[in-house]
Image (tube, rainbow, N blue to C red):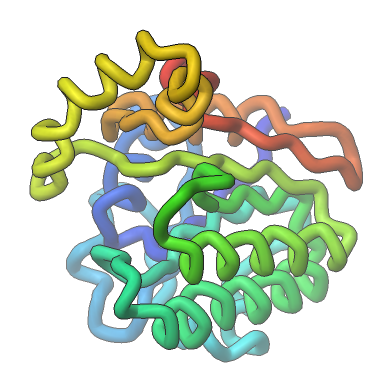
Length: 216
């Protein structure tokens, strides 16, 4: 039996796509958004406006047995935003893990990042620390690890596709090209839906890398 689904960052780029996909499948979605963002949540969701950096407020928006999909993060990440990665990405996960444990969440689904990689080290280290915090909390978890998600407003990496094609043909760069490959918003959404519907066993962790996202 599927659990209820709570999504932090539900009013964002990926959150709206996932909410729509889950509702289309007849699932109940609770959109957890910051104050003033209710209008951006997808119609048909149960909207809860909370301060996601307040563990008490966030815990009150969750229910025992929930699947929590955590999508809060720094928009348009780049190497100059290292401090913001700590303040937003990592801090929000640490608070969400406390809230998830207090509320009795059954499955914590976190969008992390493909790793290792030769660039964006501060971002990767922040996401690794976030994964470690979730594991340390003893939560059943799934980590989805894309590199870049192509979609509306997120299309400039299409210019890199010829380089990816070449790298995938060369033995020295083939594995890196696969690990750091680009995925579409549709592929990412399908991977998230699959993770929601098929959680790992109790107190275990599953990692979904780029090749598996593409195969979703």
